[in-house]
Length: 134
Image (cartoon, rainbow, N blue to C red):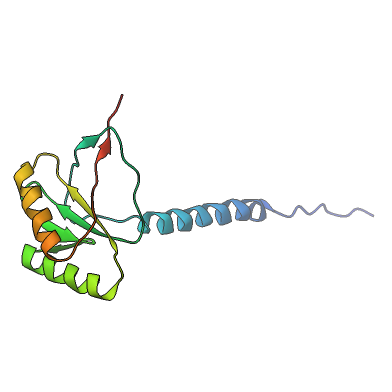
């Protein structure tokens, strides 16, 4: 008696784990990519030889080369910025405030903004800089 040999094709079964891994990596990179904070405009901060990374729960102000302002990723004018900061300072006990200004902007513009922020009730302001490359 002679039986025919039957071969089952398991090529699909061997490729399924690879497909699963590829999709898991795709999902991971999609989630990781969406967690990064995007800024509304490009800012090149000046370099500094000292400093620390800063805090996580802070108000972050961006000051662009052209004088454009943003608070926590939302573009605002200076009057709105000061009003929003006064509101946040009233609701939160002393939140940290960080200023990320473009390194090409005139220093007196930063001084004027810091004076306005002090008038709005900001007691401590950190200027964000880039570390000096050796």
